[in-house]
Amino acid sequence: MPHSHHHLLICGNGYLGQAIAERAANRSYEVSTCSLSGGNGSHTCDLGSKESVDMLASMIDPPDAIVHCASSGKGGPPAYERVYRDGIRHLRSAFPEALILFTSSSSVYGQTDGSIVSEDSPAEPDRETGRILLESENLTTTAKGIVCRLSGIYGPERSVLLKKFLHGEAVIEEDGRRYINQIHRDDAADAILHLIDLGLDSDPGISVAGEIFNLTDTRPLRQREVYEAMADHFHLPLPPTGPRDENRKRGWTHKQVSNEKLRALGWAPQFPSFLEAFPSIAATLD
Image 1 (cartoon, rainbow, N blue to C red):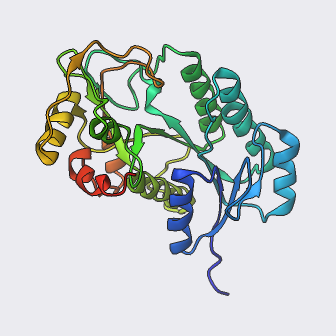
Image 2: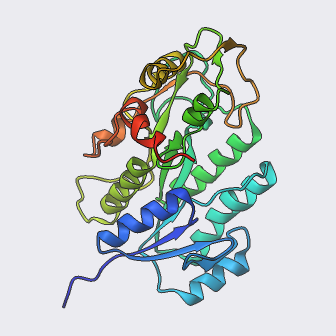
């Protein structure tokens, strides 16, 4: 009997989902993908609709593992409830045997004091959307799934910081001491598959079921440090200073998110920090 390959269902076929799918296929996973719009070879599925998820379940072989990395689009709390909280509920009900990995956000940590934040630190988000993420995390870990709290994703063709800097729109907030936590898309995809591998592996010594992991690079950077490195590399002036942006989509926080728990399981980022990556990404931005 040939070794049966694990079947992975990826819900959300966007920037991160496509990178996970590509890597999983290269590692002999059987991969199915679904997204709200279908397209790119994906099944069409609205995670917020039980009927739609049940329909998907009737169309594919039962997955061994599911990665929920769908985006809430531009919506506020109602979209978060639909895609994340209801989505996890519907996936659990339609695929009761599957290991579920939910990609949450490190924005659930509301710390503003520059402290180091681990998975044991309090997660007390100041926004309704963050509270819905916590509820969705809880549904996942209760089902013995895995939660990944991702910091800001950047990578080929995508970097908010770099774009702002190169377009002259960047502002150093106050004295620029605020920490910025990020992760390269490829490192995030590798980490997620590393956890899925461990979750499906029968090694009793390592259990990732029901656990939460921060997915972030190894060195948080102060905002000023990032812009100084870019100014130096591109021979451009430093951005002006200004007040802090309290209306950031992910909330205004100042913290150093730690990836030690995940690194202890044998994963290490290819890009320890944004400073190693930004020169090569600049070439991919339009």
